[in-house]
Image 1 (cartoon, rainbow, N blue to C red):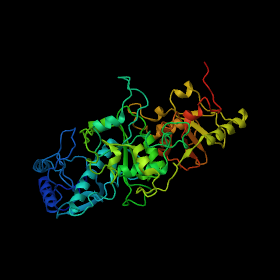
Image 2 (image 1 turned 135 degrees about the vertical axis):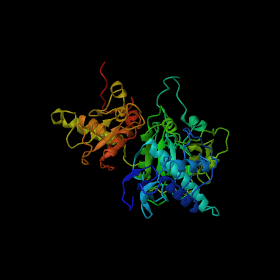
Image 3 (image 1 turned 90 degrees about the horizontal axis):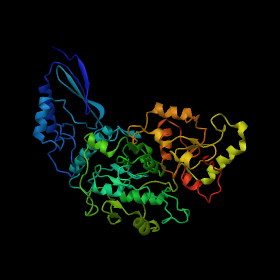
Length: 498
């Protein structure tokens, strides 16, 4: 066939291909292999402390040949089927190669920035996380090669996995509480992950007796404590100003059995990290492994801190105990030392979108003062603040605030996988059934739960639905029922009837 008439268009994970029947696939394969060799983009087999849980596949990308496959094996597989590709993360922007009778369009959108496809996305599938992790790994190697003779071995913008595992109930099999920090140390972990303990990076009574005299659990930290912790983790952050600034992308994940990764997501967002760069992996570490993602499977117990390159901030090695940040030691040495300036860029001193007991009391009293005649059928008061309680059985078992609307956090998550948020339409229906117009920015909403953790499911759901969030119209009650329901608190309560 003469000419360059296009007869098919096919899309693949790494690039799109527009081909004609004029040039045999083996010729195209030879051309691409020669091109990659000439441009020095094929990398040799390297070693790394990771394991592969899926059968290695041939990989050929504009960046490298996968280190899980010997180069020649990859080339042979590619020649036999030039479109056999492992999932890689390269955003689509065509670079067209022309011949006299065909054109091939390879999608290689901004290969210098592996984050272009996830920027601004809060929820990421397992495969999206695996893809960006793989491409970031390759871009790290390329950056190190390009800067071989300099001290700048790590690019200005990083991908950081944060393990947010936290368990509020004993394991159903052993009836014992799991130790998430120990599980992180023994592995497996996602590549170069950090473990973030919400009970440690918090305004605890031990560290902040004046801020937390009642000894409430996992209260939001001060801005300085959060910034010090981020410096210790080697995380760069703050409010982003563009795709290429020095604000890291953070992907939060957890192991099966942990439910509350939205709380870690809210921690980053409320402390001033660019919300376009804070992401939640939809699924567990075990799901990642089952889908072929690479992990670290070596133990950190007995290891020297700082040996996992890039996971500890410069000068903070002594604050880690076998991979776990000792926040108490960090606080006592640095928090009140004015000479220690934080590198993490954020002007937030108090967590955003947080309210205290008095704000909730004002909303409850306004409801009680309106009287029954002005309440609508759902128990709401027009033009007033409404309260959403996201607890599970505790709402009926322990009592609740007058006017509170019950929306259990478990209903916002998938029934098959509690680390996956329900689709938008299902979320929208849950709010509509309760008479809550989340899309009305004039409707003020306060969210409460047991101790300020599951409440973040509700906040996340409204964000995903597109609610216009402000510090005035959408707030989380940090103390929640843990504070409101105390025996020594003279707050209006509705107790269950026996």
